[in-house]
Image 1 (cartoon, helix red, strand yellow):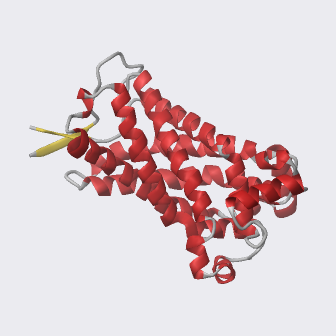
Image 2 (cartoon, rainbow, N blue to C red):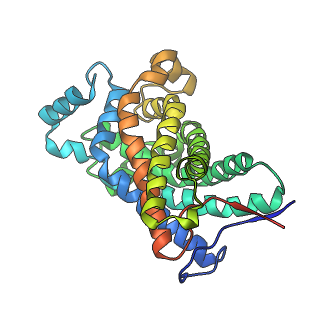
Image 3 (spheres, rainbow, N blue to C red):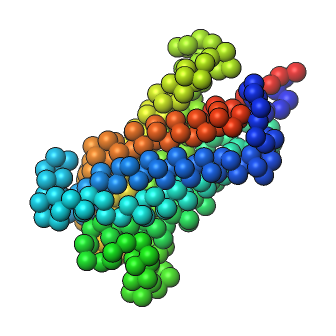
Length: 309
């Protein structure tokens, strides 16, 4: 009979005890590093994606869009908003991964004998709520810096100008669409990742995780991360288009944005470039995150393993 769920220990010296403040601190630091670095690396793709969403007639495709940006605004335009990507998504990643670990333990103890999928959904959603509140001000500035060349020189200048123009509310104007984009994405991504990892070990490798080498464990992480990122991207694409429209004042309300974009375009506009961005980014995030956990003696993946007595 299932009595309790707990995280499986790995051999080797740990930097801290499981479920201690230090444990969650390491998970948070790992999430900040993995998310911040990966989002910084794909800044040019993000610049193109946002411009494709705001001005689809001008930026029709990935190749032609890059050529247009380079020709009209110069090479530096491709890295516009890099500080918002690094710090904003670093903070978001720290909250998302750190709080996911915390809430997964919390809901496992609270909802005894509940299905694992329910635990994954609740944990990821709870973590993402806080993560998006932290991200929202950075995202507000980043989008305007990327699509309005003369708006601000960077993050610090952008915070000052946005506050002067719109007040505190300007930083959180896109919070609900951001939740609409990231909550479904996070819930699907974490759950898909967890189940993909489980499926890989049971059906493909047919060995327990602890019996596999570190390279094999990280290989499973990468494959599962790519699948999870791609599935989550399709689900979250409509809300991502709405966020860009609102922050660039193409629409005043969510309903108005949906009407202007069109129902079909909500799902298809900028989807190829988002898949090109999100799939590798999520893969690399999980790879860096699990590598950090391996090097610090924590388990290589965040799944809860049921122990029976």
